Image (cartoon, rainbow, N blue to C red; front, side, top):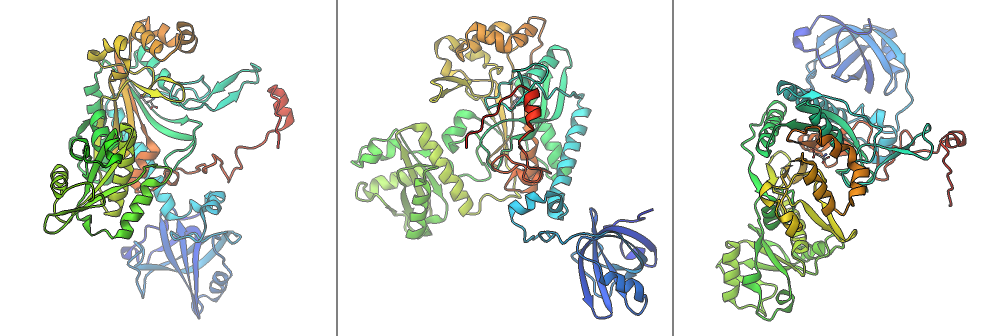
Length: 584
Ligand code: ASP
């Protein structure tokens, strides 16, 4: 037997027991006739004590240990002379009588401590060492627990977990596909699923009624902190449901997770229409941990000779409470912030409400105090508040810029507390959005999303105005999940494809099997998918989803530990009949 206890278990009540532990040497402290070793395993750290006088051989053995050696130690649990209240095992130590080195270790390239001296790249290259660090491992423990509780909840609600294939055809989530060449079908490729969307809909046609799967999805997109080329969805679909049924079911799932994992009683989730989210927050995933809602100021500020505003298609403001004390320098920095190319605003107008209620703005020469007072009233600003205003010649673009400014002010004023959660549903998304690049309407969610029944007539007259039965769950400004009620009528599906610019032949070629399946009795159905990585990183309070993925990829989509992607042998290429012609 390698051990009969772990490094996280022993307490004062275990004193005098003889125990055997195994683990890694975290730290060695030599103090004259005593040597102390912190032994680490997944469960914690226990101090081993070696006393020269009591057992000289073992003491000398301990002095030859190095960091990360794998050892087995047997000894008696004793009360510590100087206790460590930071460790659950900090009241005791093991007076070691027998020590076996199970494996030696070369010195690791960085310290295996919560505050490591290793940079990102180095830690990714040696991810198995990085994963030894408790702060990293605990994110994966949380991930396990969340996935487990998701399964428990959905199982209790009668959902079946069904695996769908990974080698499929292109799926319609609108990103680029990862493809896999088929040796047996030269010149042909599988695509890895961007989601199991079509397959789960077919499972509904098959009568499975309630499906879920915790499943890898693949999208070949440019990477950001909250994106990985492969990521995990909690993918769900239900039959004989309306939007309300789905929202209730998955609000229940979120409530369950918040309760059992975070000990938080989630209040009933507010719902916000997409139109309101855009109007008041400039985003379809508003961070509602704080207010600072947009106020439109076209009526208030136009027509006074300030040409920038007079010519704008949008003027909007936010009121930063208590920020009137911002210095000139801070305001200049905010202006620089909104002028960065990523945001692209032309400038920033500000107005302070002084202690006596008067308003001092950066555009005082165009506006009388009277008008500025109207501004103050519109913004519901109080003495001590700072009003920040952005304008644009495009309404949507203006709102998006103001959104960035609002989030930045939220950061600066400490309003985006990681330990506070604000969840909501965003509903009534538009069916389509215009793509400048493609010069056509594109599905905002995906082409199987059902329009709101009352908007169906608009499909013929004004498709851009059609709203969808689509919804997102948003937590702290992060879209954690989204889905829709699906079209289950082949004719309506055909029409939606037409509006998306597919000819009947193209639609038939791409999705013929789905439309065909619908002819065999498709039940009304709908569903959604959560991004597990995002959900976990929110619960863990992480900046990047990378930290809750065991072996993540870097920003270039590379696994630097495995060296993937890599070059393959000519022989393999020949077999696949693929010619690689790399020009350097
Ligand atoms: N397949 C969708 C997605 O990946 C989710 C859904 O509509 O159920 O976003």
